[in-house]
Image 1 (cartoon, rainbow over the protein chains, first blue to last red):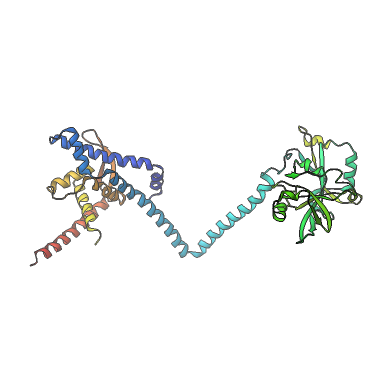
Image 2: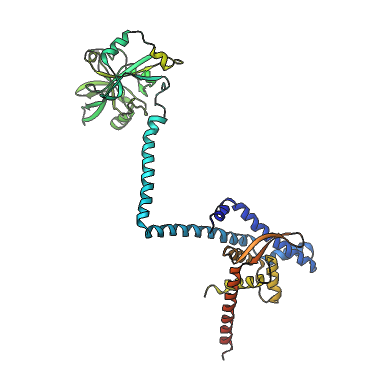
Length: 304
Length: 106
């Protein structure tokens, strides 16, 4: 069957129906005319014509089945022919299937990575004004700064509206820490500034963010937990906020829960955020530094 | 032996079209007149057969205007249809001869 005919049939289904209808009606009209010439009155002539024609609706359906049935049969034959040629040439079939599989697989894999990194905007409210600042070195594929610089920048007058940082590979930063409770479990803790979440534009789902008091030496230990941990470990219990849990055998109070879609800028899913308590700044550490350029300012101005 | 009754209707249509292109009504009228109304075929039952024969390329169809200025779908025998007609007519003769012999056997 010619491909053109098949496409025609799919596209012009209604026109096929109307053609069939016209053909049958023409027949009835011709029969009516003949009945009239043989002496029947007009209404009787048409009634007789329809009676001798039979069930027009059923006949129209039968005709359509002739065409549609032929279409289905042709598709089935094509599929069978394709399968048989594959059996006859298994090497060719293998190459075709492998090429398709690798092509589709690679495209899907690349897209699912590229989509997050390149196409989708950052999952932060301030994503259009957010910049990452630091030096690059073979040490880390992301920019980083030294804690000593951070201390200097805090005192200096910078053009930034706000800034925050988290610790890369600190004592607990991004690394393992232990939830030492009834069923101890190893989780991942990140150390962040009190200004880290506001700079990104993230507000806790419940509870509050860290304050400068939380981030000073000797302050009571507090933590923010992610939605995932809240769900899995604490069964989405609203009373979790305010509870004291044990992290690395030290009592820590949960002060809030992060939004469900929260991600660290490194796209990792840490379970717990802890404030970078002041004493850490005495030691050289690497920080990932984020700042918010004032709205309307370009990145170049921020560089000046 | 394929469906004899359906084959018979096909044979009647092909034979009628051997005389020249005609529309469905003309074919029906011819069959009824020539058979002296001994074959009671509903007019409508002709059309599924016509479309099937057209799909099998034994006849071709095209819209034309009749002498009375009406648009009608005309069917014409193709060369494939001529061959099929010759074969079907031969089969029918053999069949009717055979049936006739059995009926006459006492």
